[in-house]
Length: 329
Image (cartoon, rainbow, N blue to C red):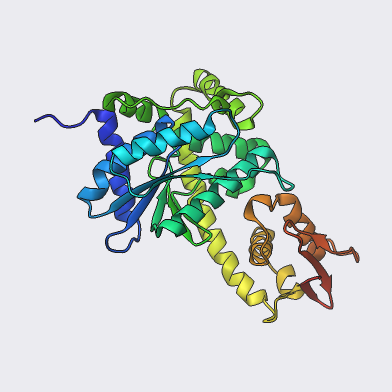
C-alpha cells in the first residue's frame, strides 16, 4: 500500500504537530478558516483526514468580505464542498470591512478575525485553524522591516494566539506555499485564485511579487531564512514581554494608573512594552496601536515638558499628572 503524496503528507504532519502541541480539551471541535485558496484548502483537506483519526471534530467557516462580484457564490461553493467532506458545521459569514481610521487592508483583516471569532463562539469551537504558510510569514517580515515595525513586527505571525478569547492556530508556518498547491493537485482539488493576491493596489501583493526577485538576487533560501528570522525574533520577544508584564505590575498604582518614577527607572525597551501593555489593557485595538502612539506615551516620561494628553485609538486618552500616568476622560 502506498502512502499519500509527499506534499499531502507534509501538510498532514504539520497539522498533527500543531494539534499535539496545542492545549485542547477532550473531543475538541476544530474550525478551519477556508477561503477556498490553495493554502486553506490544503489545510481543510488535511483536517478532514487528521481530525477524526485524532478523536477530534472538524468544522469549517469561510468569510465573505463582499469585496468582489461573485464573492457570495464563492463562499457558497466552499460551504458546499465542506459539507460534502463531512465538516460540521460548515458555514459562511459576511463581515463589514468599512475602515474606522485604519487602511482598507487592516480593516479587512480586523473584520475577518472578528467574524472568525464570532463564528467560533457560535459553534462552540475550541480552536480556529488558519492556513498561513512559510511564504506568508516571510512576506510579513518584509512588510515589518519596510514599515519599521521593530522586533514585534519582525517576529511575524505567531503559531498560536488568542483573539477575543478564541484560540487561533497556524499549522502551516513551516510549510512552503508551493507544497500546499502541490497537495491540492495531488488531491484533485481546484483552489480559488484570489485576484487581490496579484493586485498591485495592495501592499502585501507587491511584497509577494518582490519575494521571487529577492530569491533571484539572494538565493532560494531567502524565504526560509526570513521565516527563521521571525522564529528567532519571537523567542526574544516572548522574554521581553514577560519582563514587561512584571514591570507593569511593579509600576501599577492599584487604581488604574502607572507611577512615573517607576517608569522612568526602566530600560526604554522594557518601558515601551509596559506602555503598550497598558494601552491594550485600556481597550486600545492592537492593530491600531502604532509605534507613534507608544513614543508619544513615552514622551510623557522621558520627554516631559507639560504636554497634554495622548489620544489612543479607541477613544481613550492618557495624561501625566502628579507623578502618575492616568486615563483622562
